[in-house]
Length: 250
Image (cartoon, rainbow, N blue to C red):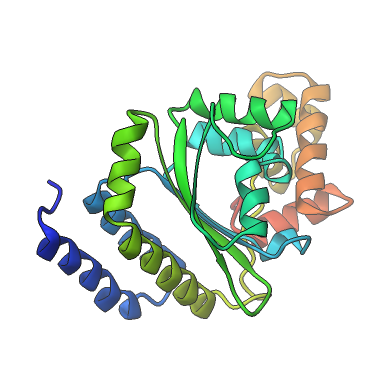
């Protein structure tokens, strides 16, 4: 049940601020953020922190977006064309967006990206950009697929608290995940992880193909993609990095 009244809403914000210092890792922070935004009425969100034109390993993300959309987004490297990210780099002001309404002109690929997102009930949202002195950019995006006027009215009602939550969130995450020692795990598809997992167990591409009932060529394709995403040249290096990032296990 959503908290009602100005006093209750302020209490919710105060609880977030009071509980945040006790979170000493990203998982605890994400749990608190999920709980808080859900009580505000925003169960669908995405937080992203990155260095523009920087190392991909310097990225941190947490989201409640559907896993199928997250996997497609990562696999297609949509972060490189995402108009929400592009605009966040150039502004410090919160902005609204939707699949059929975006202030800046979009390329065909960007329009397709937003159309694909709407298939996963991510049709419109409000993004709060944060720029810090370390050159990092972060975004807290609240998204929805139902009535846009109702959603934006809800955001407007809590906009000051939400903006402060985004700032507190980014500062705390920066403290508990100091770069460059806490890189984000590269985003591999399920099939790429499976192929890498079997390679970690000493299986050849042909062995893996027989185990998961696909062609050897398909295994090689997914393994090559995993190597590219992990930034390595060999399967052995991919396995080592996959284990280091906790993407696969022994």
